[in-house]
Image (tube, rainbow, N blue to C red; front, top):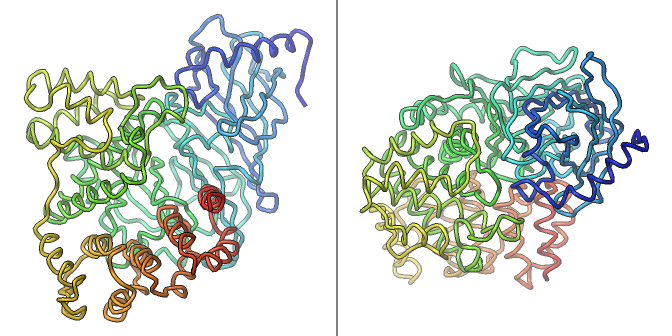
Length: 617
C-alpha cells in the first residue's frame, strides 16, 4: 500500500491536478522529462511461469534538470506497485509517497512519486500482470521441444511500461543493467551484453553500456541454445531450431561489414540475434545487441535474409538516431528501409536489390487503397497531441525510403552517402524530429545542391498523400520478363507447366503471386500448386501470398492453411489471411472456429488485431 503522510498526500494531490496540464513533448508518455530524466536503469526481477509474472524492483538513476521539481512521473500499465523508495544522501533507502492515476486505455497509468528533495536514485517495487501487453508466456506445448515454457517481450512502441516502470518515451535514453532469476534449465537473454558462458547461478546478469530508449528494453526466457556465426555475431534459438537458424544467418557478419563501409562503425559491440517461437508478432525487432526474429524468415535457402539486413540497419537508423516521438516514426523505419536496400545491393548485387525495391514500391501502391489520404503523409502538420494525429505506420517504411532514394538518385552517391553518414554521426545516441532532419537536409545538401529537390516537392513528400508524381519508379528487367509470362498465363495463352520458374528466386515468386491475387481462377491456382507445390513451400512469404490468392479465388487450401495459422503468429501474415477468410461466406465459419483454437497461440498484439476484424463483421 502507498506510504502517505498528510504533507505528501497534499503533494500527490497537486501532482494529480497539474501533471496532465503540462505534458512533456511526447503525448504518449506521462513522464515530465523536461524536469527530470532517467540516465540509468537497474532491474532486479524474478520470472514466475506459474503466475505469468515478473516481480522485483526497478532502480532509476535520475538527472534533475529543473532544480525546483519535487516529483517523478513514470509510465506504467497494469503494474502492481508494492512500495517506492528514494536514496538518501547518507546512502540509506527511505519510503517515498506515490499515487496512481486512473488507467487510460492507450497510455496506462501514471505513477506519480512525491519527493521532499531530488534524490539521485529511486526504487519501485512491483509485479507485472499475467496480461502484460509486452509479454507472451508460452506453455511447454507451444514450444518446439514441448518440455519447457517460454517467454518473450515486445516493447515497441509503448509497451515497456507493462513490464517496467519507466519514462516510456523514445525521447529519453538511458543505460541499463539487470539481474533476472528464472527456473532451472531456462536461459535468459536481454537486449544487452549476454555472457554465453553464464549458467544463471545467482541470477542471469546483464549490462547495456550504450544509452537506449525504453522501447528497446527486451527479454526472452526459455530453452535456448547459442551458436557463434563470426567474431561479433551469434544466434540464439530453441535447440531444435538452432542449426537451421545458424545456416540461414551465416552472412550476418558480412552484412555488418557492408553497413560499416557505408555508414560508419557499428557502435554496439556485438550483434547477436534470437529466433523466437512463431507466435512472435512481427518480422523482427531491432533490440540492440540481441535482435528478436520471427522463425518465418527461415526458408532453408537464405532467400529472406533482407529481414536481417533491415534489423541490422536499425543499428544506425532507429537505435543510434531515434525518432523523438512516434509521430516521427518514418525517421526510424523509412531510413532503415532505405539502408536495407543498400546493404542487400552490396552483398547480393544490384539486380537483386532492384527487384526488391520494385516489389517494395508496388506493394506501397497496393496498400494505398486501404489507407485514408490524410494518413498517407510521412508526418502530419498537426501538433503532436496523440496517436490519432499520426500517419499510417506501414506506409512510412517504403515511402520514407523512396524519398531517400530520390535524394540519392538526384544528388549522386558521392554526395548523398557522406550526407547520410553525417546525419548518423552528428546525431548518434540522440532522439530527433522531422524538423531537425529537414534543417540538416537544407544545410548539408540542398544549400549546395538546390536542384536536387525544391521546398515544394519536399513538402509534398513529407505532408502529401501518396507518392509525388515526380518520383522515379524502380524497374527490374528480370521482373519485366516475368510480367510477360504472367500476362500470357492469366489469359490462358501459356500453360502452367511452361512457366519458366526454374531460376526464380523468392522475390520473383512474391511479385508473381502479388500480381495474380484477385485475378487468377481457382483452377489456375490449383494448377500452380500441382506444378510447383506452393501450398507446401517452406518459404513463408511465398506461402502467405499463395494462400491469400487461393482464399480469394475459392481454391481449397484449408489443410495447409490450418497448419500455417495454427503455427504462425506474425501479424503481417495472420491479419490479411483472416480478413480474406472472413470476407468469404464459404470460409467464415471455418475461419472463426480456427481462430478460436489458434488464438491462445498468438501474441496479445496479434489477438487484438484479429479480434477487431471479428467486431467489424
